[in-house]
Length: 249
Image (cartoon, rainbow, N blue to C red; front, side, top):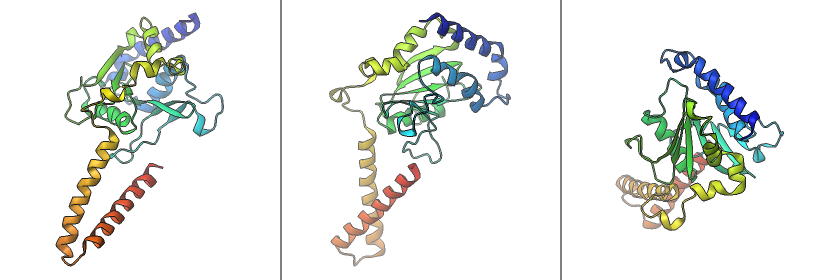
């Protein structure tokens, strides 16, 4: 690890430690946006990512997209950071203000895991800077999951300097560029048995919608023919999918 990066990281950690008690106080006004600006942006810049788009790349080619679009059922919610290389998504980072305990907040963990799973990514990262947690997102999440499920790496901010080589090997731009990120996190297809992908989940949902729509249409239109029934159901589903795509964009 380069001396300059080490010194910048030490300053970043020291700055957080000086005001930690204020940041983690549940009544503190210190919010997520401030955390991102003050700490997370700089942390991932030290990992080699062009968080602020200093290179001036057009949106399709930016390395980091803020509040990226991803299709999930929770309307209005987007991952805080999307890390990409050559336009390809690699992982999401969901930020929470320091007063949120990212190790025990079920809603925060579910949100971060769901983003990655919905996008078909291997991992998602959750951080309030106090802790940096990596979750595998091949396994479909549920809101009632134990908070430790799918957690594969966890770092406390006081460990950042000592373990920065480890963090770099996992999440840095160089790790993605070299291919070591994919070797570490991407799960081969033959090892995904029993794990429901988002595509499979979506197809299951559509089949359930078909049954519900058919039952309702037959109940209210007893004379409908099978051809008309299939046509009407497909029109309904096409419209629903179209609207969700519009919302996503």
